[in-house]
Picture 1: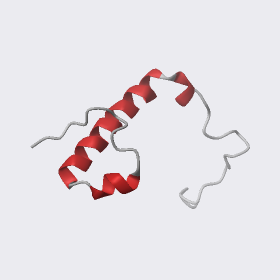
Picture 2: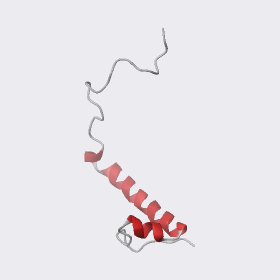
Picture 3: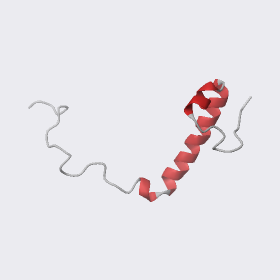
Picture 4: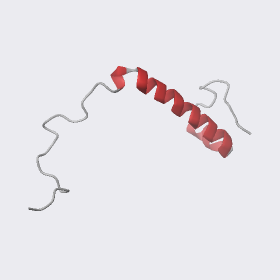
Length: 67
């Protein structure tokens, strides 16, 4: 049986979510993931930034081969 919530706000708290059967939890989390993906892909404010500035990046790496 596949559970589909009637509205995204049906389960508002993690405690309530944890109390549901695994099948219902998975369905709710899958729907939330789809909504988050749509928001992420359509909202440029979520992706139009630099994670690191030049000052954050170091020229040396511990993964670089010794030479």
